[in-house]
Image 1: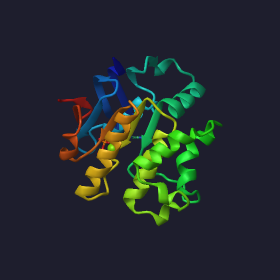
Image 2: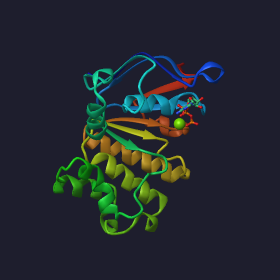
Image 3: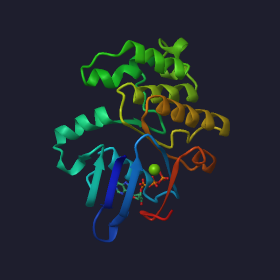
Image 4: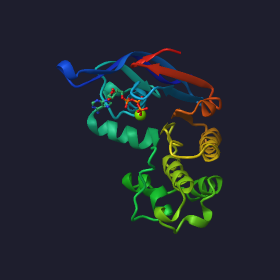
Length: 221
Ligand SMILES: Nc1ncnc2c1ncn2[C@@H]1O[C@H](COP(=O)(O)OP(=O)(O)OP(=O)(O)O)[C@@H](O)[C@H]1O
Ligand SMILES: [Mg+2]
């Protein structure tokens, strides 16, 4: 079963001589539970494609269907709920809230939705990511790897169907990169989620079930 179906997707930025065709006719299906890696040169459209799957941008043309939902048919309010419940974002620069503890950061998406944490699930995630001893610490007290694990835990806590990770290992050395990518793969497998990850690292791409290569807003492989 496909969890993402994209048809003839185009996304333009700007107008006239400033027009950028960030995505120029993308057709793509992503199977549920699989690990997909998106690669391609800087500016090839990777982040744009990921943001469109996450419902952050409106298409210029074409359709994006996620878990049976045609995103074009959602109101702004429904889109907000979609983003909060269906997708988990892991950003390159973690985006943690500095004033909140690690535990509070992880639980933050739930507080936005007024939902209660599932204590058992919370412990399971924290164990998997090795954050047990760090729950009362603040982000600046953790290494980059620890902060990225916190960002991963925060993305998982709402049990989203899809995890979208944009260069989650961008600032790490080879070994830490492999650990972070391995953790993402392992956690999403454990919780039967679909993982879509952008990377420049071809070694990490080998962990994936499927590799999509973008060039100038088109899929070339
Ligand atoms: N919000 C925006 N406004 C204007 N142009 C944009 C915007 N977002 C992306 N672009 C342009 O669209 C093209 C694709 O950008 P995108 O960020 O998707 O590339 P990328 O593959 O993620 O690159 P990188 O590897 O550097 O992150 C680029 O030419 C970029 O300048
Ligand atoms: Mg990018």
